[in-house]
Every structure is written in structure tokens, then in C-alpha cells.
Image (cartoon, rainbow, N blue to C red; front, side):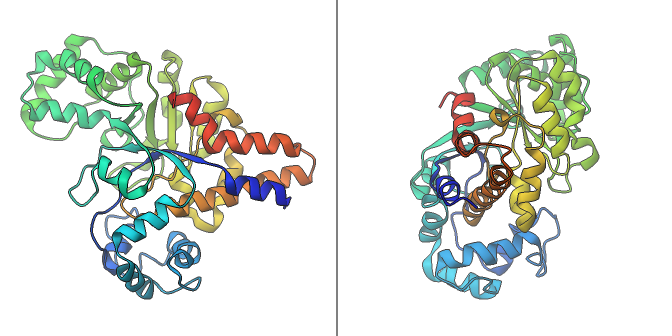
Length: 364
């Protein structure tokens, strides 16, 4: 590969446009393995996967261990260094310029955002999860007839650079695209609020999306790969096409695999649609170059964003950045060698995907 391209990509700042906080305590082997799978049933073989191999290959040297060190030895070394040092090495020294953190899956096991920013030595901005805002109104005792105005007021007060929806988990992306009326929303909220259950009503999920669209701030939509709480076939971003016809607020399709080609088409076809494959790159490990290459078959380069979707495990920040840099270099290198792109244009594409596109989209 051209040395100048490889070194340039390695030196690029990254804006991680979708990620999560990391754990505050030490992890034993079972704890580590739980973060290496989307399965609800992790076990001692959960590290026997592309992600497990990638952690052993790329993360072990950061802890001054040989490449491919077995996970039990890896965990012992993590404990010797301590959580603070492990977090600093894997998050603070990987070239991250800014983190846009989804604050939705709150847990006492994770660092609060101000703590995380200090531990990671990286500035943090917040992506607010729409379903979490709605459920906070439930806990506050808001009545059904007041729900539409209370939710809109809560969004106006939220310190968010963007929003996220997990409608793919709660119902599916095959939602009616129409904007519901406040009367329809109040009726649905009146049924949901007294139940004490999590929000799954499709009328309310549509209302959340439309309310977020009215703010003009980007809306991140979970698509594709996730834990078994979702029905995968209903997490296909192609289901969103009717909604995308109706709005002009930026929509960011997150993760997308195995529907990343559908997502690339939507980004190609709609001026307000963007995508990333952050979670996918970590989970496919050695196949990351193939997945990123398939996205770049069709998606406009100014519509592709970097993210890691790191959650809990600091290693996932480092691994996401490493696999992204490596994969992007390999894809662009092939194009340069075939004279499909000039070296200068390859540098520009890389810089835009790494950080420039996110800075423009979120006004950073």
C-alpha cells in the first residue's frame, strides 16, 4: 500500500459519532466475555469468535502482551494495570478527537459521562435516546393527555447534539410513516403510561421520531445487528424508506449489517441520509475490510461516518479505530493502485469519513 496513504490514515483524528461509556470496575474473564457477544447467553466460548480473535490480536500488544495471548492471561494483565490505566490506553491514546455518546443504556456499572470524559481524556457530547426521554416522563407521572407537549418540551431542554431511536428493538422499523395527531398520541400514551412497561407502542414510537425530526437535529436509527431483543428481519433500514420520503431532517443509519448495502443505497438516494458500520467492523474482525468496501461500493463518501459503538469494554474503542483505519487504508489502496482514484482524492475521502463528515453534520 502507498506509505503516504497508510501513514496519513493512521494519523487522522477520529470523531466517534456513536459510542457508549465504559465500565467503572474490574472485569474477570466472564465479565470480559460478556462484552464480546451480542448473545443473551454468553459463556466461556464467547471469545471463540471474530471479535475475540481481534481483541487477542490487536489489543494484547497495548497491554504489553504478545499478539494472540489467550484470554485468561489477557484478563490477568488487565487486572495488574487496573481499570483506569486500561481505559486511558485504549480510549485516550487512539487518536479520538471527540466522542458522541449515547447516554440511553444507563447503568451503575458504567461511568457517568463527565467521569468518562476525564477517564478517556477525550471531549464528550451527548446523543439522547428518545425512548429514554419518553420513559422518564412515565416515571415523572405525566398524564396521557399531557404527553405530547411534555415530550416536546423535554426534547427542547435536552443537551443533545443528536437523537437516537431503538424502535428496531421496541417494534421494528416497519412503522407507519405518517405523523400521528396529538389526539392519537394522547390516546396511546393513556394506554401505555399506566402499564409501567417499556415503550413499544408504534403510535408513540412514530411520535418520538416525528418530534425529533421537528428539532432539525440528526436522528440516529439503530439498524441491523443487535442483541436477540430485536427481530432482525424488521431491523432492515429499507423499511424506513417511506418515512425518509416524508422528512428532511438528517437520519443516520447505525451499524446496518447485514443490511449495509441497503443502507448504502438509502444514503445514495436521499440527500439527508447517512450511515456507519461501526458495530459491524468490530464484530466481523478480520472481515472488516470486506464490509467497509461493500458500503463504499455505492454510498457517497460525504455520507459515511466513523463510529465504534463501543460499549462497556474500553478495548472496543481501540479495536474500532484500528480496524477502521486498517480497512479504509486497504480499500482506498486498491483503488489508488488501479488508478480508480488519485492519491489526493483518497486522502480527502479518508479525512472526511474519519471526522470531517461528522463535524459538518453535527455542527461540532
